[in-house]
Length: 593
Image 1 (tube, helix red, strand yellow):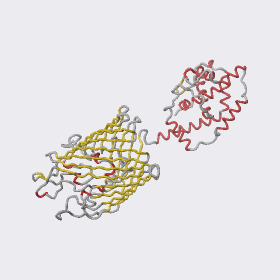
Image 2 (cartoon, one colour):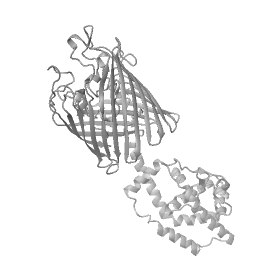
Image 3 (cartoon, one colour):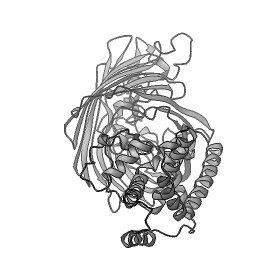
Image 4 (spheres, helix red, strand yellow):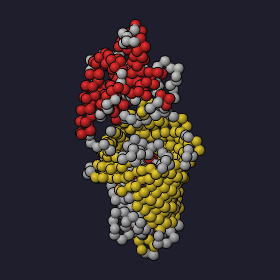
């Protein structure tokens, strides 16, 4: 940063001091000689000198950092503009005591600047440091006039008065010059060593202890195992982690380019070898044996004042961008501890979020009344040019959502999602709810031909509500309805889920969050297909409603560390009351930086 910029920033307070100097000089000229300072002048200088710390006191590190921060915002929102006439100042009147002095400095020397709103703010408090810097600015201007061969424009009496003032503030000027030079060196070093001028690093690390509890399942009917019953719980207590590092870049201050790295080893509590159901999954699970890879890459930018666009290059997900889920429990690292408890599962329709999936989404603000949102999300093979893959011929989910805000504390969302699933990628509910709901036709036959590998489509409808009753209480919930149908015939399956929640922001301290949730995980409530023959043991619907009760409390230790103990209970897992109740407990510690 050059001294010229520094002087311009401090030019406004210098005007007051220079104006005072010129007024004193004018009085001296009227008397025919340079007068000695009056008693009142000496008293004012004494008061200022007593009010300002000694120039020899060294600035501590915090003061230095504050000055560097001041440089970083220099000229933003409070810039000063050069004026050529004192009449340009809206708050300066001819009756002001220093009007003539100010007029002289403006019109004779041109070293007066004003604020963008055409004000001078002459009553603003002035420190000796500011006076010294401002005086230096006027001296530089005088030197420019002399160099331009206009010395006759500067009077000898003026130079004498300025010289005397310069001598009085010699110590402050020298100290200030030294401090500015030192800060210039430090700033240059920081700019040279910083990671990037446009990119910042942000991160989240989760350490978790978790386990499940539940007795072995029973059988029903004629003694044959019924699909949907759960095998004996075989899980052990685990300690696992998930680490995410995000490189956030902005080129205009309003856009965002994010490239996120991830490593994790949180094995899901699911599958026949463990709990036998996807309903026991955690909100942050997934395992890649701690291999580091790019799991997210997107660019978000505005168009005008009300429209935002996001383009995902990989791991495109409806709920991880600009689409609102209207749930205070959405965050996998800070919100609910269960997968189902985060938000309405229809946002996982087709569950395309994986390496290779691409997408585009938008958010259009409708004033204070809400927003219109939507997007297209391709499947995990969107980067595969082979047949039945790519952006438009493989798995996809297309969605639209209207968010209404009838009042500032109430949000209501109406959502529609159309999804397509190739035969080998069927996951209607995004690994939430019963196995029957995830793939309603698996294992069934049509004319002796097994249903494996048959493509499905689904229409998904959802309504979400979130009401901030008070700063300390949030209530809400959601309902989701899915109609899944085969592409080869007219068979269909109806799938439903719902939930109600209570959130308690800042419970017990700022940044804390208490959460309660009760709901029904996705279950098949009706199908048109009726199996026969050897498949007469297959279900046409889930027998009972699989219910989930969840409670958690996020305790914020400080700005960067939070601990969340939580538990959720599953009644009638897999939609079968013959299955015993399952319990899942977790202690999640989240570090953010």
